Amino acid sequence: MRITLAVLLAAVLAGHDARAAETAPPLVRSVEISITNVDVVVTDAKGRPVTDLTPFDFVVKQEGKTQAISNFSFVRNLPAPAAPVAADEAPSSAASTPAASTPAAAAPVPAGARIVVLLDLLHMTTGNRNRTLASLAEFLPKTIGPRVEVQVVTWDRALRTRGPFTNDANVLTAVLSALKEETALGEAPARERSRLFSQIDTAFAADPRIREVLIDQAISTLRGWCDAQAADIDATLDAARALTGTVSGLEGRKILIFATEKLTPSPGREIWDYLMEGVDRLSRTSGGQRVASNPTSVTGLTWKDFDRTASFQRFAEVANGAGVSLFMVDAAGLQAGDTRLSAEFAGTGDSVNEGIATLDAESALHLLADETGGAAIIGRNNLALALEGLEPAWTAYYSLGFESATAKPGVPRSIRVSVKRPGVRVLTRRNVVERTTEQKVADTVLSSVHFPKTVNPLRASLHIGKAKLSGKNWLLPLEFKVPFEKLTLIPQGGRLKGALLFTAAARTPDGRISPVSTERAPIDVPESDLASLTGKVFTYASTIKVRPGPQVISAALTDEISHLSSYVQPHVVAGDEPAKR
Image (cartoon, rainbow, N blue to C red; front, side):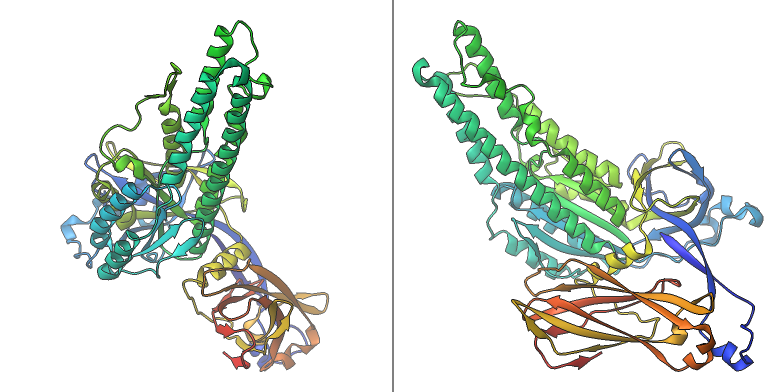
């Protein structure tokens, strides 16, 4: 988090009277200090939250360098208000520490926790989907409360929000129950995978005169299948990144419970392994006869052509930038029995190394969880019980802040947090990604298309004009007015200079969201006009392109110098009569 400290200039401009000096826009020098915040969960050997730690119990290192903790708070998000702590239960170490060495006063307690449950219906089979829903229906009503809200989202090649954040158990139960009636698409890839093995087996067992052609066809079919699976994996992770972005601008603890099945960075790796074993065997037994028309086109590393590890890494980086912790659930692990045993197919003498696919998928889920301070739930038959054990991650945690000597917006920076108490377990993200003020405003604008935020420290007013048709879309004119006394201007060579940033996005009722756009409106007035600006407004006009019909416009105005931002989300209908807000 980056904080701008404005230092008022004590000198009053010469040539202006005292009254003008009192009412003139503030003149400032900006000093940038980079503050990084990180949430830390500490539990004992039995998984119970440790709640009596002080700042002096923590060691925070960023890129290997120990950081002094400047902000510290313990956050408790209980279903009911926490009971007051008795005087004799208060930590003694804090009381015995000299005031002079105590870190800065605790920051305001952050907002509560928001949990997004993302159900990957594209990859989950019906049986595992239903088991997951049953476990969630058992657990979620127990964890929600005044400071914990949940939202359910599904993915089936379209990202569908199943209502707003809620702490109403009846609403959650109804949403989860309704999802049991919808189609899960995970059976289709499994059927196609079985057909691929059968096609490969048929080619290997065919008459040598036609075997080469059939093996070439099997290789081509396998490539096409892997391409399709890789595209689905990319689309799934793109959707997850987009969902993460929508909550980036929200305050408080942010958790994404992502339930999926066999989401692997290496689609088809075990099939290529099976194919190569068969090719090698036939090459040894055919007396040197060519097995495929182009044997060099398939090697033991062909599966890497479809590798999607980079997509998983990008997802982790986006989650860290948004302050979201990922709790990855392998729905296949909820079923009874061992699904990881090797299987033999007809007549080839070769076996499928299912362990490759399983290990790849599990490693990817662990990567996402470990990098973001979350957890991976794999091979658990009782998801509700597993989530209950992880509940301290959003109900009892520490918020630590420290000043970074140098800011590196957009660059992942390693972070390690340890506790000076034996026998405890520390859960936190491994990397943090700093965001500029402009990026954080864009995050909030994007979040606000779903979760309205209306604040107006700039005392801005907005007039919405009448939309005009432009091709298939509409051009919507907007006019903002901001009092000059709310703007921060800097004297430069006889001029007063500053700027407003206008950031906007739009969302239609069917969930389509436009890209976030930002425009800069420079402010440049003569210094001699300072006194005359009192009571006047700066006017900024812009036009945004919107789709036809009703939609939400999420807009922000940001003072480029003071970083104060006003947010508003008017509902409009393209072509409707002008409105004022």
